[in-house]
Amino acid sequence: MKHHVLLSVGCIGLASVWLTSCAAPTSTSTATSPSSSKSKVPLVSAELSAPGTPGSVASGKYRNLFVELGHSEAEVKAKLDKGFASLFHGNPQSETVYYLIGHGQNENGPLAQVRDIGSNDVRSEGMSYGMMIAVQLNHQEEFNALWNWAKTYMYHGEPTHPTYRYFSWHASFDGQQLDPMPAPDGEEYFATALYFASGRWGNGKGIYDYHAQADDLLDAMKNRQDIKSSQKSGASLFNRERHQVRFTPDLSHFQSHGDHTDPSYHLPAFYELWSQWGPEADREFWKECAKTSRDFFLLAAHPETGLTPDYSTFDGKPLPASWDANTVNFRFDAWRTAMNWSVDWAWFRADPRQQELSDHLLSFFRAQGKGYPNQYTIDGKPTSGDHSSGLASMNAVATLASKTGEGDFVEALWNQPIPTGQWRYYDGMLYLMALLHVSGEFRVYPPQ
Image 1: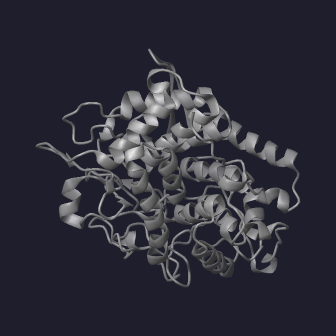
Image 2: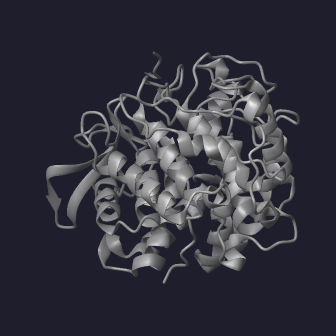
Image 3: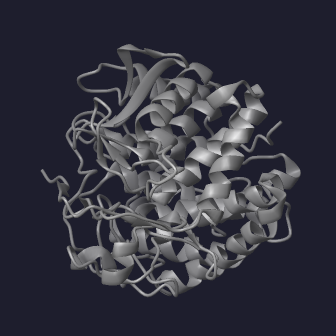
């Protein structure tokens, strides 16, 4: 059984070096996958994904692929409820990743964290995913407790700190920051979850004034100026000239690797919403970011397999990290890239090329057969023998943009057990988000 290794190199993703699988399957987290003998399971409403039809944001209609395959709405709701119950309130030793801090209460109320059980830490990725899942399933108490812990222990409020107004990507269970630098995908999900919370529940006071908190975070992500210190120096989370999210704002990393990106951090659907909801002075910038990311996916994805690398240049060229040359390959971060372009297509229908990307990707994995590996070179050579439910979950979401009308990956997600055991964190978060997207329950809530 494999796991990832932590190295103290002092930067997001640099400090967490994905040498081996953080989402390795266990006997209780084994995913099902489509086989060559069952390659065509039809979706009855595939025409809803056709070019020219309005996206979900314009139409208010979100496809429920499970229902299209013949499952009842009651069955779908029961599956969502069961997944949330297990991963948020299940057995603390083998099921849950959400932990309410028993003694943890401050002036803002209860505190809770999403834990990476396999690595014994807390990540901004998981905290922001947890908040997004909570707002989508209408669980405000869990949402607020996670946000309170993140603001209390991960947020940098000191104006002279190089990561001022950002969140440490990596902390211990007791709140000690293990790396002060942010992972920008955490900030992206924090901001969007906060806007949705404003729309779903209205705005409170202080850190629970969701709309104001989201606006402030967006402003910092784009406009914050460089801050230098004797130990660390930090820039904005977006390259303002390239209109792209950075892998890290750590200026010392620019010297060793150049300023670059992570394809799975590109979230054009979120940027499109920010261009409508964010601070007015920056709305055109976010609109351009959405367009740039849509173009970027075509540069980063292999033209035949649809696979993307973990890290790349702003031009989409795979980029090897100094600590791990395998970041040029399709691995754990890259699993999520197809979710990002597929959700953008489902919500906005702005770029039909995203359908081609999904079809290439799903055709590739369909040809790999049952139990396909979780890591490849981007031209399709396996680099691992493991199969992971997190990847299977993301492939199901890719069906939202597919033109073929085949639902085999969706049915594989339906049959997949809820992740449990040592590696349940990453697999579990991706599993719940996939259930939400594929069921049409991952929805846009305009802020108040």
